[in-house]
Structures are given as C-alpha cells and as structure tokens.
Amino acid sequence: MTQEHRQKSGFETRAIHAGYEPDPMTGAVIPPIYATSTYKQDGVGGLRGGYEYSRSGNPTRTALEGNIAALEEGERGFAFASGLAAEDTLLRAICSPGDHVVIPDDAYGGTFRLFDKVATRWGLEHSPAPVSDHEAVQAAIIPGRTKVVWVETPTNPLLNIGDIEALATVTHDAGALLVVDNTFASPYLQQPLVLGADVVVHSTTKYCGGHSDVVGGALVVRDLELAERIGFHHNATGAVAGPFDSWLVLRGLKTLGVRMDRHCDNAEQVVEFLSGHGAVTQVIYPGLEDHPGHEVASRQMKRYGGIVSFRVTGGEQHALDVCARTEVFTLGESLGGVESLFEHPGRMTHASVAGTDLEVPSDLIRLSVGIETADDLLADLDRALG
Image (cartoon, rainbow, N blue to C red):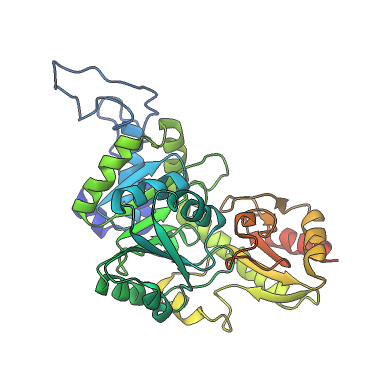
C-alpha cells in the first residue's frame, strides 16, 4: 500500500494492508515470520533491503511498525518486547539526569514503578498531576526542566479523561513533549497524534494483540528527528520485539476494528446492568453522561472502550469475594483480550502504588469486557455480586 493510498484509506483497510505488500516471490498475503538473527550481505556493506542483524531490523517487525504507524497516523513506529520496554527506551531517548516529567496522579502501577523506582535512581524527577485538569498539569510543569508530560487517557484503572488538545497546548508552550499512552483506547478509538501529541505509547499486549497470547509494546511518532533519536536507542538498548511476537501483534491488528466495536457493545450493556445493581456504589465509564470526562471523551474518542471499573458495597472484602465468584469472567491481570477479565487493582496491577498518593480504592474492581455473548457476561456478574 503506497503512502498516498494509506492516507486515503479507512481504518479497517489500513489495518489489513498497511506495512506490507504481498511477497514478490510467492505472493504470500501475510508476512512470513523471519526467524533469523542475521542476513547474508552481498559484499561488505552490501545489505539486502537494509537488513544486517535482527536487533537492528527484521522484516516481520518492520511490517508491524509500518502498520501501527499507519493506524496512529504517525510517521514512524517502533515495536518493543513489552510496553514498559517501550516506555523505558523513550525516556532514555528524550530525557537526561536532572530532567523532570509530569505523570498522571492515577498512573498504571507499572508506569509509576518505572518512574519511581528506576528512573528516579537515574536522576529523573517526576510529579503527579490529574490528567483531567490541564491547568493542574500546567502548574506541575517546571519551566526549563520538564521535558515530558506523560498522559494516559483513559487512565488505568479510574478511567479519567485528559483533553489531548488542551494538554498539547500547555505542554508545547513549556517546550516539552506530550506522550500519550493510548493502550486503553487503541488506535481504533483515538488518535492522539492527530490531536497534537508527540508520541503515542502502546502495550500491544492488550487490544492491539487482542488474544492474550503475546507481550509487546510500541511507540509511534510524527517527527522524524525524534524518530531518529528513538531509533538509535531502540537498537542500542535492544528491547526489540521478536519476529513471532511481531507477527502475532500484526495478526491482531487486522481485526482490531471489529473487535473494538464488540468490546464497546458489551461494555455498554455491562455498564447499564451494573448501574442498576444494589451491590454497586459507583460505576466508572466515560460513556456515562455523569462521568466528569464524558464531554471530552465524546469529542476525541470514536467510542468509550471496553474497560469498566466499579466500586461495591462492603469494602475490600466484598470486592475480593466478587472476584472469587465469577465463572465466565476470568480473574487475571492484563486486559484487551477477546476473553473477559476481572481484577482487583489494589491487590494486583496497582499494588506498587499502595501507600502513595496514587493508591486506588480498596473496593474497586476493574473489568476488561471481552467479546463473549453479552447475556452470559451479565448473568456471571449477577451471580458474582450476590
């Protein structure tokens, strides 16, 4: 697919075709898994297609990187061994000891751990701010020192919404870069680069892969100079996606649009059910009109996603009991797969923020609503809630 054709094509067409042309020798419509570590050179420096060593480049990974860049409407993509590997590489590419980063005050636990336990020892400082309040984010910026404003929208697990256009304005006014973790929304529901962000981060383990069978991460950028810096660190530190993992994520991206529509359909039915249940004290979902970020989400997202969080009566113990009683929902970490998952953030994905300002409520449950029959999901929730 040519660059011109890519720009004119719809999302689902790009998801299937962008990043790879059928193999000229065999006509294979799906990229092969190039399970090779090195490549024959036609003389010293005579590279075939630019490939010399698979840490630096692999054709299967190249296909994935081109595909996800097209879906995010960026100029260049990079595929990593995990989402956190992507985050770590990005920080090393654009920050130096003594720099400062603004992070969400309800950031994903793994992201917070990276900043608080790893990057801090390297000399990178951070300050939390609510992504839903761009003025608070602006106040957290330290002029001359803040290099990055790091945003999740929706956030994990409280589903707060950041106004990407407004955040881009205050970030760029301070001479910093806006990084948006787009994992929860996926490229199908939201394109942060189009709204003014500089870098998009994905845990491709989640919706991009979509089948809970691969761990991966990605970065997409719109500035080629920044891409060169990231590319250097991508190769120099080596946390790259392997060919089989790249192939699995690329396979998942081909069905992202149809899967996300079903995730959203089911999530909306789950939200309606939970909103009327006596054992539920609060339902958190951007699609609800009383959600503080509903208007912004309606403006910058195609739909509201497949993640639903809710709080229950009876405190933490009841939340733990509910998690133990599901049969269709699987108790497990991660999200974005075709199967529905249940988790207790305070004890599981967000245990690393316990005792900090980022601690999540102990009665909170997070659902990753899958693509099963909706009636089965509702019956399972009704049984678990007792």
